[in-house]
Image 1 (cartoon, rainbow, N blue to C red):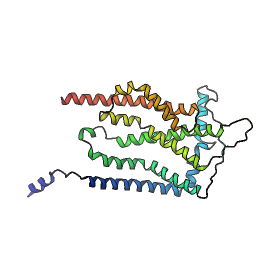
Image 2 (image 1 turned 180 degrees about the vertical axis):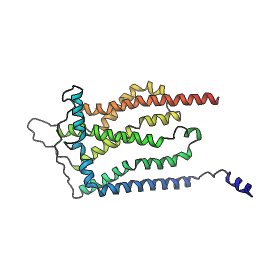
Image 3 (image 1 turned 30 degrees about the vertical axis):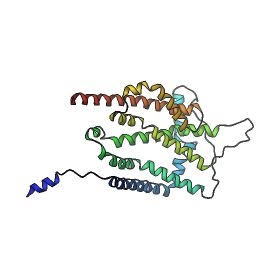
Image 4 (image 1 turned 90 degrees about the horizontal axis):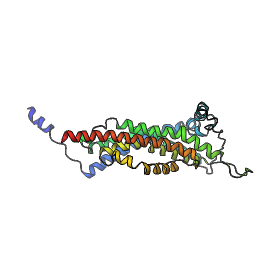
Amino acid sequence: MALPFRKKQEEPKAEMTFVDHLEELRWHVIRSVLAVFIMGGVIFVYRDWIFDNIIFGPVNPDFVSYKFFCDLSHWLHLGNALCMPPVSVSMQTTTFGGQFVSSITVAIVGGFIVAFPYVFWEFWRFVKPALKDNELKGTRFVIFWVTFFFLLGISFGYFVLGPFTFNFLANFNIGTRHFLETKPTLNDFLDNLINILVGCGIAFELPVLAYAFTKIGLITPMFLKNSRRYAIVIILVVAAIITPSPDWISQLLVFIPLFLLYQLSILVSARVYKQEEKKMEEWS
Protein backbone atom coordinates (compact mmCIF):
# COMPACT_ATOMS: atom_id res chain seq x y z
CA MET A 1 0.00 0.00 0.00
CA ALA A 2 2.86 2.39 0.81
CA LEU A 3 5.02 1.55 -2.20
CA PRO A 4 3.05 3.51 -4.84
CA PHE A 5 2.94 6.52 -2.53
CA ARG A 6 6.68 6.33 -1.93
CA LYS A 7 7.44 6.00 -5.61
CA LYS A 8 5.22 8.95 -6.37
CA GLN A 9 7.02 10.99 -3.71
CA GLU A 10 10.44 10.21 -5.18
CA GLU A 11 9.53 11.38 -8.68
CA PRO A 12 11.70 14.33 -9.73
CA LYS A 13 10.02 17.71 -9.79
CA ALA A 14 9.15 18.87 -13.28
CA GLU A 15 11.26 21.67 -14.65
CA MET A 16 9.62 25.06 -14.74
CA THR A 17 8.92 26.68 -18.07
CA PHE A 18 10.01 30.22 -18.96
CA VAL A 19 6.47 31.47 -18.27
CA ASP A 20 6.51 29.74 -14.86
CA HIS A 21 9.79 31.50 -14.01
CA LEU A 22 8.29 34.84 -15.03
CA GLU A 23 5.24 34.18 -12.89
CA GLU A 24 7.39 33.28 -9.88
CA LEU A 25 9.59 36.36 -10.45
CA ARG A 26 6.46 38.50 -10.63
CA TRP A 27 5.32 37.37 -7.19
CA HIS A 28 8.79 37.92 -5.70
CA VAL A 29 8.77 41.46 -7.11
CA ILE A 30 5.23 42.11 -5.86
CA ARG A 31 6.07 40.99 -2.32
CA SER A 32 9.27 43.08 -2.34
CA VAL A 33 7.48 46.20 -3.58
CA LEU A 34 4.72 45.63 -1.02
CA ALA A 35 7.33 45.46 1.79
CA VAL A 36 8.95 48.69 0.57
CA PHE A 37 5.57 50.45 0.44
CA ILE A 38 4.61 49.24 3.92
CA MET A 39 7.87 50.52 5.40
CA GLY A 40 7.54 53.68 3.32
CA GLY A 41 4.01 54.20 4.65
CA VAL A 42 5.27 54.03 8.23
CA ILE A 43 8.01 56.53 7.40
CA PHE A 44 5.50 58.86 5.75
CA VAL A 45 3.24 58.79 8.83
CA TYR A 46 6.17 59.77 11.08
CA ARG A 47 7.75 62.09 8.50
CA ASP A 48 8.02 65.10 10.82
CA TRP A 49 10.12 63.24 13.39
CA ILE A 50 12.20 61.53 10.67
CA PHE A 51 12.97 64.80 8.89
CA ASP A 52 13.86 66.60 12.13
CA ASN A 53 16.02 63.84 13.64
CA ILE A 54 17.35 61.80 10.69
CA ILE A 55 17.13 63.57 7.34
CA PHE A 56 18.38 66.94 8.59
CA GLY A 57 20.91 65.32 10.94
CA PRO A 58 24.07 65.95 8.83
CA VAL A 59 23.23 69.69 8.61
CA ASN A 60 22.35 69.99 12.30
CA PRO A 61 25.08 71.81 14.31
CA ASP A 62 24.45 69.38 17.20
CA PHE A 63 24.91 66.28 15.02
CA VAL A 64 26.85 63.57 16.86
CA SER A 65 29.50 63.23 14.13
CA TYR A 66 30.70 66.83 14.49
CA LYS A 67 31.52 66.41 18.17
CA PHE A 68 33.02 62.96 17.63
CA PHE A 69 35.47 64.06 14.92
CA CYS A 70 36.46 67.18 16.84
CA ASP A 71 37.17 65.12 19.97
CA LEU A 72 39.04 62.58 17.82
CA SER A 73 41.14 65.37 16.31
CA HIS A 74 42.16 66.60 19.76
CA TRP A 75 42.84 63.03 20.95
CA LEU A 76 45.17 62.48 17.97
CA HIS A 77 46.90 65.81 18.72
CA LEU A 78 45.85 67.21 15.34
CA GLY A 79 44.44 70.42 16.77
CA ASN A 80 41.20 71.39 15.01
CA ALA A 81 42.06 69.61 11.75
CA LEU A 82 38.93 67.42 11.91
CA CYS A 83 36.73 70.01 13.62
CA MET A 84 34.07 71.37 11.29
CA PRO A 85 32.36 74.73 11.66
CA PRO A 86 28.61 74.57 12.30
CA VAL A 87 26.41 74.27 9.24
CA SER A 88 24.08 77.22 8.93
CA VAL A 89 21.72 76.94 5.96
CA SER A 90 18.05 77.63 5.43
CA MET A 91 16.43 75.41 2.83
CA GLN A 92 13.59 76.28 0.53
CA THR A 93 11.12 74.74 -1.86
CA THR A 94 10.29 76.46 -5.14
CA THR A 95 7.07 74.62 -5.97
CA PHE A 96 3.74 74.15 -4.18
CA GLY A 97 4.18 70.39 -4.05
CA GLY A 98 7.88 70.45 -3.22
CA GLN A 99 7.55 69.37 0.41
CA PHE A 100 4.97 66.69 -0.42
CA VAL A 101 7.09 65.22 -3.24
CA SER A 102 10.18 65.27 -0.98
CA SER A 103 8.20 63.40 1.71
CA ILE A 104 7.22 60.74 -0.84
CA THR A 105 10.85 60.44 -2.00
CA VAL A 106 12.11 59.98 1.55
CA ALA A 107 9.36 57.43 2.25
CA ILE A 108 10.23 55.32 -0.82
CA VAL A 109 14.02 55.43 -0.39
CA GLY A 110 13.76 54.95 3.37
CA GLY A 111 11.31 52.11 2.88
CA PHE A 112 13.75 50.37 0.54
CA ILE A 113 16.64 50.76 3.02
CA VAL A 114 14.59 49.44 5.94
CA ALA A 115 13.10 46.60 3.89
CA PHE A 116 16.41 45.73 2.19
CA PRO A 117 16.96 42.46 4.15
CA TYR A 118 13.54 41.21 3.09
CA VAL A 119 13.95 42.43 -0.52
CA PHE A 120 17.27 40.61 -0.84
CA TRP A 121 15.76 37.52 0.80
CA GLU A 122 13.07 37.48 -1.89
CA PHE A 123 15.77 37.86 -4.58
CA TRP A 124 17.76 35.02 -3.02
CA ARG A 125 14.70 32.77 -2.92
CA PHE A 126 14.29 33.27 -6.67
CA VAL A 127 17.96 32.68 -7.53
CA LYS A 128 18.70 29.84 -5.08
CA PRO A 129 16.83 27.00 -6.91
CA ALA A 130 18.94 27.63 -10.05
CA LEU A 131 22.21 26.99 -8.20
CA LYS A 132 23.86 23.60 -7.96
CA ASP A 133 24.64 21.91 -4.66
CA ASN A 134 28.34 22.73 -4.85
CA GLU A 135 27.50 26.38 -5.61
CA LEU A 136 25.21 26.58 -2.58
CA LYS A 137 27.98 25.56 -0.17
CA GLY A 138 29.22 28.55 1.75
CA THR A 139 26.12 30.68 1.03
CA ARG A 140 24.45 29.95 4.36
CA PHE A 141 24.89 33.47 5.73
CA VAL A 142 24.70 35.32 2.40
CA ILE A 143 21.64 37.34 3.42
CA PHE A 144 23.33 38.45 6.64
CA TRP A 145 26.59 39.52 4.97
CA VAL A 146 24.96 41.33 2.05
CA THR A 147 22.69 43.20 4.48
CA PHE A 148 25.58 43.88 6.88
CA PHE A 149 27.84 45.49 4.28
CA PHE A 150 24.95 47.44 2.72
CA LEU A 151 23.91 48.92 6.07
CA LEU A 152 27.57 49.49 6.98
CA GLY A 153 27.93 51.57 3.82
CA ILE A 154 24.72 53.45 4.60
CA SER A 155 26.02 54.20 8.11
CA PHE A 156 29.38 55.36 6.77
CA GLY A 157 27.70 57.71 4.30
CA TYR A 158 25.35 59.09 6.95
CA PHE A 159 27.72 59.55 9.90
CA VAL A 160 31.03 60.23 8.13
CA LEU A 161 30.79 61.29 4.50
CA GLY A 162 27.54 63.24 4.75
CA PRO A 163 28.63 65.65 7.50
CA PHE A 164 31.97 66.38 5.82
CA THR A 165 30.32 66.89 2.43
CA PHE A 166 27.50 69.18 3.56
CA ASN A 167 29.80 71.11 5.87
CA PHE A 168 32.23 71.80 3.05
CA LEU A 169 29.53 72.78 0.56
CA ALA A 170 27.63 74.97 3.02
CA ASN A 171 30.73 76.91 4.11
CA PHE A 172 32.35 77.26 0.67
CA ASN A 173 32.39 80.90 -0.47
CA ILE A 174 33.34 82.63 -3.72
CA GLY A 175 34.87 86.10 -3.50
CA THR A 176 35.45 88.27 -0.44
CA ARG A 177 32.41 90.53 -0.43
CA HIS A 178 29.92 87.75 0.35
CA PHE A 179 27.33 88.80 -2.21
CA LEU A 180 26.22 85.16 -2.50
CA GLU A 181 24.22 83.27 0.10
CA THR A 182 23.88 79.50 0.09
CA LYS A 183 20.17 78.70 0.20
CA PRO A 184 19.72 75.19 -1.25
CA THR A 185 16.42 73.65 -2.18
CA LEU A 186 15.10 70.70 -0.22
CA ASN A 187 15.16 68.59 -3.38
CA ASP A 188 18.86 69.39 -3.96
CA PHE A 189 19.72 68.38 -0.39
CA LEU A 190 17.81 65.10 -0.66
CA ASP A 191 19.44 64.25 -4.01
CA ASN A 192 22.91 64.68 -2.49
CA LEU A 193 21.99 62.73 0.66
CA ILE A 194 20.42 59.83 -1.26
CA ASN A 195 23.39 59.62 -3.67
CA ILE A 196 25.78 59.46 -0.72
CA LEU A 197 23.82 56.82 1.21
CA VAL A 198 22.90 54.49 -1.66
CA GLY A 199 26.29 54.96 -3.35
CA CYS A 200 28.16 53.99 -0.18
CA GLY A 201 25.77 51.10 0.46
CA ILE A 202 26.46 49.62 -2.98
CA ALA A 203 30.20 50.34 -2.89
CA PHE A 204 30.58 48.51 0.43
CA GLU A 205 29.43 45.25 -1.19
CA LEU A 206 32.96 44.68 -2.58
CA PRO A 207 33.84 41.73 -0.28
CA VAL A 208 30.53 40.00 -1.06
CA LEU A 209 31.08 40.39 -4.81
CA ALA A 210 34.65 39.10 -4.45
CA TYR A 211 33.34 36.02 -2.64
CA ALA A 212 30.64 35.33 -5.24
CA PHE A 213 32.86 35.91 -8.29
CA THR A 214 35.66 33.77 -6.88
CA LYS A 215 33.18 31.03 -6.06
CA ILE A 216 31.97 30.81 -9.66
CA GLY A 217 35.48 31.20 -11.08
CA LEU A 218 35.27 34.67 -12.61
CA ILE A 219 38.14 36.13 -10.57
CA THR A 220 41.09 34.89 -8.52
CA PRO A 221 43.09 36.50 -5.69
CA MET A 222 46.06 36.77 -8.07
CA PHE A 223 43.91 38.75 -10.48
CA LEU A 224 42.82 41.12 -7.71
CA LYS A 225 46.42 41.61 -6.55
CA ASN A 226 47.69 42.27 -10.08
CA SER A 227 44.82 44.68 -10.71
CA ARG A 228 45.40 46.70 -7.55
CA ARG A 229 46.84 49.72 -9.40
CA TYR A 230 43.85 49.84 -11.72
CA ALA A 231 41.51 49.33 -8.79
CA ILE A 232 42.99 52.40 -7.08
CA VAL A 233 42.12 54.52 -10.11
CA ILE A 234 38.59 53.07 -10.24
CA ILE A 235 38.10 53.66 -6.50
CA LEU A 236 39.22 57.26 -6.93
CA VAL A 237 36.66 57.71 -9.71
CA VAL A 238 33.94 56.10 -7.57
CA ALA A 239 34.91 58.35 -4.65
CA ALA A 240 34.59 61.40 -6.91
CA ILE A 241 31.14 60.24 -8.08
CA ILE A 242 29.81 59.44 -4.61
CA THR A 243 31.02 62.70 -3.05
CA PRO A 244 29.17 65.74 -4.39
CA SER A 245 31.84 68.06 -2.98
CA PRO A 246 35.15 68.47 -4.82
CA ASP A 247 37.30 68.73 -1.68
CA TRP A 248 40.03 66.15 -1.26
CA ILE A 249 39.11 65.41 2.37
CA SER A 250 35.66 64.03 1.47
CA GLN A 251 37.09 62.00 -1.41
CA LEU A 252 39.87 60.68 0.84
CA LEU A 253 37.25 59.66 3.42
CA VAL A 254 35.59 57.53 0.73
CA PHE A 255 38.82 56.25 -0.81
CA ILE A 256 40.33 54.87 2.43
CA PRO A 257 37.45 52.53 3.43
CA LEU A 258 36.89 51.41 -0.17
CA PHE A 259 40.58 50.60 -0.55
CA LEU A 260 40.51 48.69 2.75
CA LEU A 261 37.44 46.83 1.50
CA TYR A 262 39.35 45.98 -1.67
CA GLN A 263 42.16 44.58 0.45
CA LEU A 264 39.58 42.60 2.43
CA SER A 265 38.16 41.35 -0.87
CA ILE A 266 41.60 39.95 -1.76
CA LEU A 267 41.73 38.06 1.55
CA VAL A 268 38.19 36.74 1.06
CA SER A 269 38.98 35.71 -2.51
CA ALA A 270 42.18 33.95 -1.40
CA ARG A 271 40.31 31.95 1.22
CA VAL A 272 37.56 30.90 -1.20
CA TYR A 273 40.15 30.06 -3.87
CA LYS A 274 42.01 27.74 -1.48
CA GLN A 275 38.77 26.02 -0.53
CA GLU A 276 37.87 25.46 -4.18
CA GLU A 277 41.35 24.13 -4.96
CA LYS A 278 41.09 21.70 -2.06
CA LYS A 279 37.73 20.47 -3.33
CA MET A 280 39.17 19.96 -6.81
CA GLU A 281 42.07 17.95 -5.39
CA GLU A 282 39.72 15.76 -3.38
CA TRP A 283 37.46 15.25 -6.41
CA SER A 284 40.38 14.33 -8.69
